[in-house]
Length: 319
Ligand SMILES: NC(=O)c1ccc[n+]([C@@H]2O[C@H](COP(=O)([O-])OP(=O)(O)OC[C@H]3O[C@@H](n4cnc5c(N)ncnc54)[C@H](OP(=O)(O)O)[C@@H]3O)[C@@H](O)[C@H]2O)c1
Picture 1 (cartoon, protein in one colour):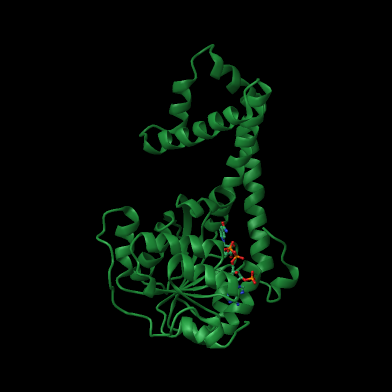
Picture 2: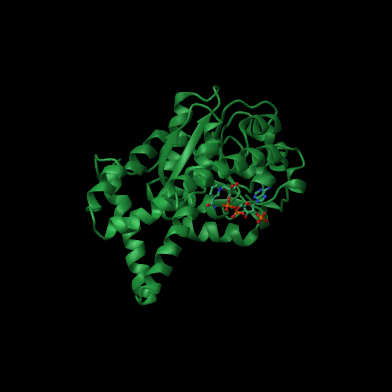
């Protein structure tokens, strides 16, 4: 843990973590309703990078006051950015951020987490821990945190950066119902959240929604390239492909019908869609998706093993 003097490292004067709500918005959106579950608690972030900033922005927009958010961040430029964008306290001093924090979100890179947890264990003994680090298992977190048992592990995805994420959540048995509600509220600030009852299911979450945006981007790349090959302007091909993926996802999300039913409905016998679908079937697209996601899930297990090694920073390769 790098630290600086309080005068250099903090963007706010220190004060105890407030315990009571101050100016929460009236619950009138899903994020705000979920935020009400925070019930006056303040949140400390360890690591203030891309994902923490997305969560902080979501929480602020949903009505959580800036005074109830603090960030431990070692990069001075990142601290200044967080202060300027969100008005939150950002500091390199663990005591200033973590003292009395009821909820601590671990948002550093997975390979940094072992060192960070061991350095902070004594300070977060009474806190609910929510880790958003990809791949790091609760057993390893608990070991690094001296046996802590109030740990939630979250697997978000990159659309959280535009408040359209979906997060898989798993909690150790020591996490009470109110702790689960807090974790749900946190992730609802950037999208939706789904609980799993077995931690191993997070490997499946990683394979479907964690890595999933890359699959969709790859499909988009292919659709755009195909549009251009059919003579469309690049910008036109991009707009058609993007709006088709967005619109189809919205239709599927709002329909009572399954994706299979919706697919059949646009596939007239002998028509254009059927001609394309026959090619997908011949190329075994369904089998390809199954093999790709199985490979992702296997890799999630391998990375979990690697990240649990106590000198993971020496062995880890980027997921
Ligand atoms: N980005 C995503 O879409 C996404 C999706 C799913 C899960 N996640 C998870 O979210 C976590 C954060 O990802 P990110 O993309 O936001 O990472 P990031 O941008 O690198 O942010 C992490 C920040 O924490 C700082 N830091 C490192 N050690 C620290 C310490 N001891 N105390 C305080 N701050 C420290 C880092 O500084 P340095 O740069 O100097 O190390 C960096 O500014 C990761 O574990 C990742 O697996 C991210």
